[in-house]
Image (cartoon, rainbow over all chains, first blue to last red; front, side, top):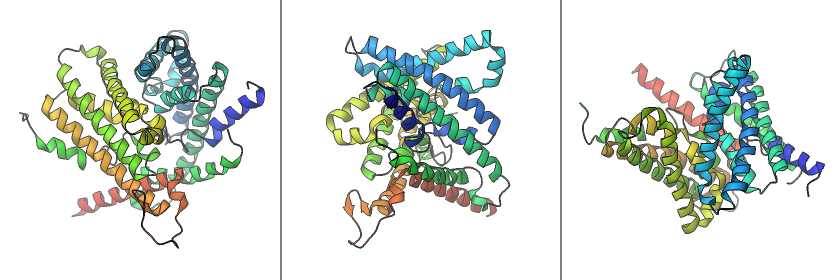
Length: 196
Length: 202
């Protein structure tokens, strides 16, 4: 069943139909916290794409080559979180040494990513759907691209809304949630596109 | 001087430092599993168990663990409790386990739990840490229960699966769909801001 359309469906489903932020509600802490500013949203979005794709591929390999052959599936949660945490640390060291410009651009977002549940979730979901390596790669790319897209669009709207006359008790976080509700409503429209 | 048993710690978690409304940590599961009251209560109980258990263990080992490796150690402790919860639920209530799905193992990265481990259990004695875990867990459960009640009653016309209204009731379907969760939490936080502002004026 591994053909190009299949991969395209997996990508589109992860990107739009089951958008990680608006439909699956994952990674919301960073979403609400960071999206007040477009520049930092772009930084966070790109950092998430980078880390999710790498971390998902590594956890897929760890699960299929280490945990499954030795019947250690129950160690899944512990192994994945440790893999991701140590991978983020490792990556931070490499980027700081080799690509200092990129390191300055990522700033504090790299370490913050360890606790972003979107990444651990994509690792779990890839395993739950029993994807092959390439499918898993495309799936994690779709999820993180969806995150990046929504956080940038959302930050753009939030910068505009700063100037709008909002009732006082709705200022700040509450209006952000109402906005997210409206965007989520729009994303529900993609649901009938096709079934995976 | 801190008391050995301080019940204020317990009450703090329920209202004054409520993890969801006031510190805004751990929002993901609250929104994701609050479309039915039963699932929401299941999630609440799981969080209470993990939070209390990890607070207990971490406050016991706080003097043995070297401070620069403490975060990985805490994560392993939390992950162990999450795995226990995951497998216990799968054995005793497979229906709820299926509904909670991926959100159950994701308790590991729930910021409330690591936040309490780092911010409270690593500095306080065992009994207070347990009380803090219970209080914070109950505060979390309370909010997820309120949100789930609003969503299920409006969106499905039922409470814990029992129909509340007559057959003519047409539910607000949007409430049990994803946008409803964002709407309810947004309005709840706005209400909280309103209450706080009222207090300041008085």
